[in-house]
Image 1 (cartoon, helix red, strand yellow):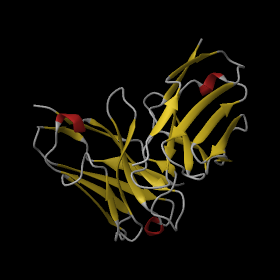
Image 2 (image 1 turned 90 degrees about the vertical axis):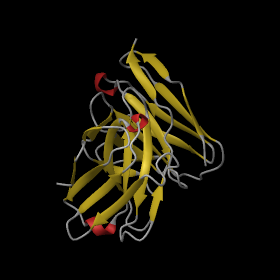
Image 3 (image 1 turned 180 degrees about the horizontal axis):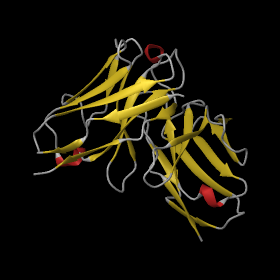
Image 4 (image 1 turned 180 degrees about the vertical axis):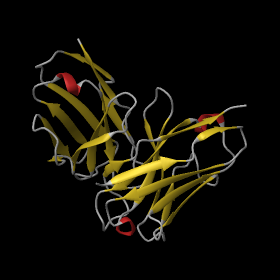
Length: 107
Length: 122
């Protein structure tokens, strides 16, 4: 099993801020990492796959980086609609575990 | 439009059974692996089970192995999750999710259903 540590669990920020979320793996996964956004009462939505590829329709203020064991999701200029919970997920091997989640709240 | 629609959730007693369904539309269902992912109230996402496009390969989380069975009917574009010996800790919203790529059993999930709630309680 590949374990992951996602941090922080809670991030307080203001509109316009640049925010970063980290995901660290217990072993290397190349670039088999995805990031999802989930809003309350809604299903998750894919933001980034292959560590850094933006899913179609996702705003360019979202970006992903990293490979191997350390990954980062960056929101360059936080918008009101970005306040949500974010999850990383490895899909290098079964089970494809999710990170614990990072809630981005209004400061 | 690519769409997944779950059904079959509800209230069930501990030890009981339930079958979830996920109707797919807007894509070639048989070409893609599918998964079930659940989310307990106020908690994070937990992958539950996956099945290859052909249905020939299945995968389970340790927490449900031996109790849950994933299957698919490609002629009906429908994914299933048979849940037996249900426990209180199985209480969650259950989502079906489509894998992105058509060649791999494991990939990012690009399409999600709206979810169906399963409550296990006496």
